[in-house]
Length: 521
Image 1 (cartoon, rainbow, N blue to C red):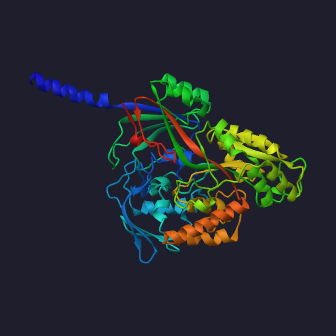
Image 2: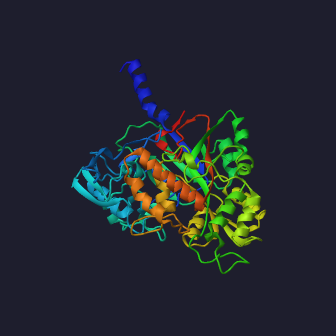
Image 3: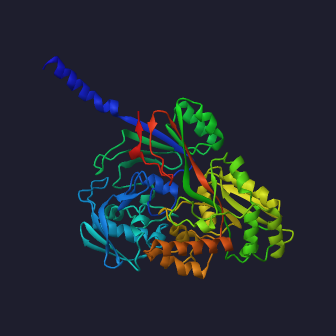
């Protein structure tokens, strides 16, 4: 063999090793489960989008694009949608993907024990046409349906049956809680909840590989200072989020990049609308003041949102008056203004409602879910106290927080909501519809807010094809929610990620981090 051929062979042999890169990242919240149908939360869905796939997905610019379906088209006059499935796709264990897996995943994800059940409220039936064609029938025309299922992930029916995981169990857990078998670009090779989760590329993935990662490891780090130190030292390649107070310092380091944007997530205060009495009050024990819209309006006028944004968020967030930000489809320009900060008006409203001296209550808040969540709740507590609303703050890790809310164990709570469809219909369905398990509505409406007109408008909003008429109905809902102060929207959360300077990635406004777009240089 000639010298040049030997050199070429040596380069070829060394190339994969030189190309191979490991990637480590840290975030405050560890995914609660590996089951894509058990918990409808961004930490879970964002992580599992690396492992599982849906019929459709969102691209770098958030547009809907093909995934396990190569195309889709409406059936008849709005009767449903026909999806043509991608052939030759295999799950991580080598099993073939077919329409039967889609049907199974619909049955599983829409089961009453699934936290994603509300996604399928418009669906009347799912029909397997053949191995690579499936019809999803809707009870009324639903033009936004394909975009609404971008985070519905398809599981292998055979794998789930073999491992006794045919239904999700978010309380006790099952095999799918710790183990995965998706079709995505990465597969989970180690899972230690609260400590680390390891992923490696799936060699049999059908898509075009854009990354150069051979191994990725997620480590939850709750302490912000510890996360920043790990990034500065190079122990991790990325942290999410960067503490707002550390942005300027990190920007001075040549080895670190700070990536900033605005998330789709609205941070808001929620109330126990249907509770008969407060649970944590020392002076009002036989009634529920928050059932009176005047009291909820008083809360809105008592919270100085601009001050929170200036001091706690360091100018990195935007105030909002609705359950969606101005960047979302269906945002109501007519209801764009927040209730002004007006403590005197808040006191007047409380007196009008029969509470001239205010009252005490309990405020529940997570301390590791949203950016500066506990600090925001502390600020809100102080502001409410100025008008006589005396809150006892109870902040806790998010793994303990969701069970408290689902058990109605609060008098007021903090919630963040990012519309998975990037459309104003989404929070109406989940947060503002009267809870109805049969219709799969209001699954995150913890307080049981109910308005007959909102319930009447929702199916019309879902089926309306004329954008102008549809926007008019969304405007009406936005006004109802604002007039009744169903929630008190505060601000749109900022996105602040930190990476080492040799990392290239894509930051999307849904705060999902996808490894398939990351490279280590």
